[in-house]
Amino acid sequence: MSIPSPQVGSWRARGRVWAVRKMMLRPEREAAILRLLAQAEAGVLHVSELGRRLGVSEMTVRRDLERLDERGLVQRVRGGAVYVNSPTLLEKPFHDRGEEYHEEKEAIGRAAAAMVHDGDVVIFDAGTTTLEVARHIRARRVTAVTNALPVAGELAGHDTLSVILLGGNLKGPELCTVGPMVTASLAQMSADLLFLSAGGFSPERGLTDADLREAEVKRAMITAARRVVLVADASKYQMVRFATIAPLDRVQAIVTDSGLPGEGRRALEALGIEVLLAEPAGPVDARPQFAQGRAVAPADSR
Image (cartoon, rainbow, N blue to C red; front, side, top):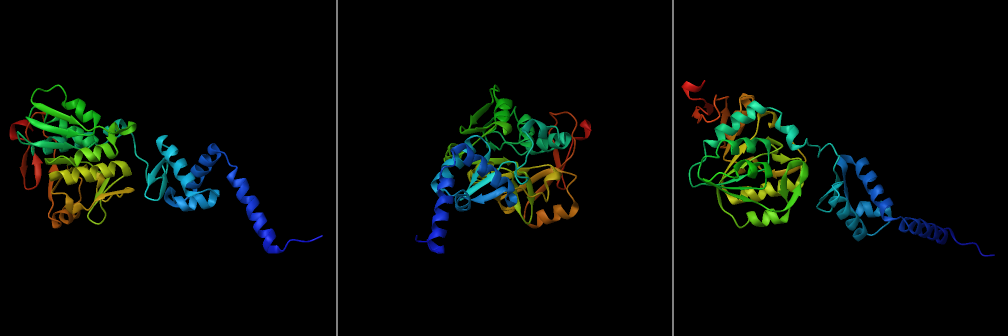
């Protein structure tokens, strides 16, 4: 009786392992992918690594990832995927974030609205602070472009406004549209002003966000606008999120609140960025004035 050589036996053993892996059903593969991503550092794995661990082709992995992405369980990135419950991607739903720093956001929105002039074409990014800006410019004659349903809803129905809602894939928790349809539409536009939101901003790491798809839309908005104004409360300063949007020098002005540290303001101004600190300004229809980089209320509305 012939005895197979160790090398032959080794190859046969590998073949059996391969056969077992190939027999894994799609639901089992998808569960395995989620488990591997959850265990990976930062929740990220490359397609080739997933294929190697599962013993399937990269094409099979890509199809599985597409299905998982459609179900909101992973987020596709270049060459791989990210587990959506990774700490680097965690973000609170839109309505929950709206309750945080509400007074600061309202003041920021009022101050930023003073930058809008009749006849302007203004892009509104999705965010709780950009919504506050929209609430304070609804009486002005502007063309508003947005991917945010709350912003469009706030501005709708006013005779002096023209509202363009960018169509695309709806991101439910954020109540905004994302994807190639949004970016393609923005590529055909030229705007006077962009009110931009971000999950974090810092001189060293620039503008960042929790969601890669939203970051892509924000970059397209920046390209379409002549002037970019970041509206963000001071808690976002030096916060770094998963997805890079752009370097901070793509921003011409930042409207934030007085919680911004002095050294932070100096670092931002050293980049040539105008920094405006918003203060509570009484009635919502009071037009703020800017003094020494600070937005203050008119004297009779304090």
